[in-house]
Image 1 (cartoon, helix red, strand yellow):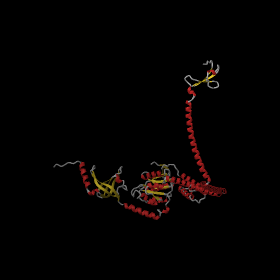
Image 2 (tube, helix red, strand yellow):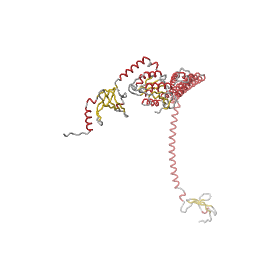
Image 3 (cartoon, each protein chain N blue to C red):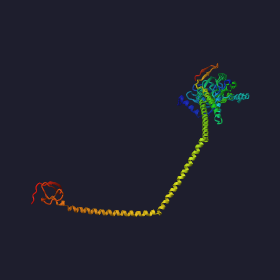
Image 4 (cartoon, each protein chain N blue to C red):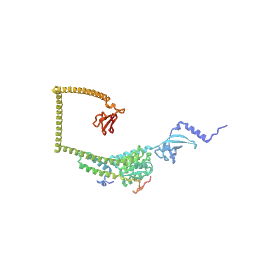
Length: 76
Length: 445
């Protein structure tokens, strides 16, 4: 994966989790103004959705890679 | 000469018995060169051991053959351990091998150590070049043999942990002369195919079997690969050069699958947990603020003029009712004292004396009434007696038996017939009633 692809929208699951952890920490701090807390909450919820979307829940078959780069279905 | 004749099996059994009793042949180590090694379908190996003078038939049964770390090849110099016994059915003795070592194994090990030191010196194993294994790989490349336990274990464990991960297999040759090149091709093809992580490895075997993974070219291919590589060669105790060059070493192929494929439940669980905590934190924040607002509004109310007025009013009412109660109590006390005084006064006053007299006159009156009543009763009694006596004397008692009392119209008794005239009216009194009669004829005597 090239570095350019990692724009704001396309963060890895782990990066998203890190951000979520930080947001949670901020949210758990009582001194945070309510409006900011709401904004943080909303953006965190969006991140959570991204995390869920990132798990592409389609069962995959094992593929066989050939030397020319083509793939075949692998039968065990 | 009457010699006993034996059967073939009797003789073979006898010889077998002799071999079995021999202490030395029961546990012996024999060194020789391998000849005519034959692997049977069931796993048993038949071969001969020879030296420059002689040949010894050998057999290594399936259960022992499986434990061998190398494949027997002609010309190989080995040392076998086991027992020499008789194959009764074939009438030959042979070496039953239970363990075997290959001579000259030390050479390969020395080569391994030398290469390891060289590559380490060149920095191929340096920590700073290690790439991080992705948190959640969605495409996992596998470079290993397409058959055998290794690939099966990797696929099985990956599927169990997360069936949505795409597995791509490069069917590599992992043993023998072509292995080195095949593994390198596999790594490069996988790097080009754009997977998130690559597992390179094979199942367990002897140091010769695993040798491809100790080749410098393979180590360099691993080092040059831009995709993170997890090595998984043999068993936990087998460590190869490839393991040192890889970004992460897994002790077995199964362990490699666990390192490459994250448990899906962990991730979804983590997401759910984050959501809960987010919800909880914003909720508790809101609740906290709401409570604070409530408290403030209550404090404010307490400061309002309306509240203060009401409060004063309430206090005044309370004081008033206390005063009332006090007054009532006082009045009650006074009253009761007055009553007491009145009683004592009554005892001392002339009115008290009059009361006594009145009482006495009442008593007397009562006694008089009683005496009068008694007197009246006696009088009535006398009266009744008199009435009875008078009754006995009544003129009516003289009537009856034909005698009547005749009276005239004036009610006076008629004393003679001569005093009457015709047509006069007479009243005749019988004992039980009165009859009116008229005079029709008069005759005087």
